[in-house]
Image (cartoon, rainbow, N blue to C red; front, side, top):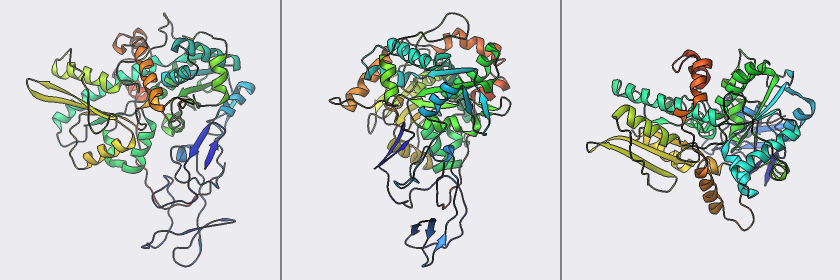
Length: 475
């Protein structure tokens, strides 16, 4: 059984009943007595009824926003019809046509610039599907979006570099703080670029786990700040007149873009207005076969071109932070990076020893099975790690839930191996050597440790109080 989000999002394995384990994050207090058998819900013609105590109690209707429910299908049954309006390819096509959009506050705005930002993972996914080199796929995708009406199509290397540099610096500061406050929750630092993992942490483990999560924004949201601040200023347009679209490897990036934390009260708009994915039906096919156009470079200086990063296909956070910490904290400029698989290939670790003593232990944990094991170790104070690159999808972002699936006759494992090889073949960006990043720190952020740098490149998280709810989803 499947329900579709505007023809682009697909939810599978849905049940006709809300089970006790499928708790919604939308808190609504309902007074009820505890029973040994759990809640019994009756679905009537005009709503839901609690019949646990032998009498019918009509349950309160709750309005659910995209930010409330996109990452969780637990509350959605096959009887529900869910329409996501602002995060769909239909909405994007409407904006191309009308050059207007309605923001999350219900304000309709004229569009001066439509900007598309391409993440490398969906780009490689489309390249694999249409058997194209990565640069060729980028050109075809840029040409496709411009044929629809996009003004600029950008790669996200600069935002990825900024995210890596901030995460490196944040880890070193946390490590030093932990030495000063051994009982505090500075370490391990847990990666923050995966919104599925962040949503799970906020909903399930709340105030316990959140202090460990890195405050560094994901590349998507840093790119949003760049577009709405730097690009808007360069093009002399209001930030609210820019319609910013990102192409990402997972549906949860839609949830991330919708967070109120990423709405700028000063600019009166979100950093990212719409998120689409490689797994978008006929649009992907047209993009793979259309005429090419160059990627745009509105930042000044020579264009860098499409780049990847050393390390995992999720951005290489563990590798970069490990090498930086080894040098900054222990003077090891050429620390060996040799990972050891633990229970499975999606949980692996790397260790640095100095004078025979272990001084750093990092891990990569992909998939919720490994995430749950990690959290349990933390709760038992048994975690040996200083940093963990955490991604909700098994094998990380290259295997994101919105990537193009394997074609007929191709195994998912073979496709993933192909994507990993393609990512490793991309020219490598070294964040520390990126001249544009240095200029942005100086001219845009007024220094690496400035208040503006903290505001633009970091965020906060929120524990979500859960309670019994009944849902009647209306869009």
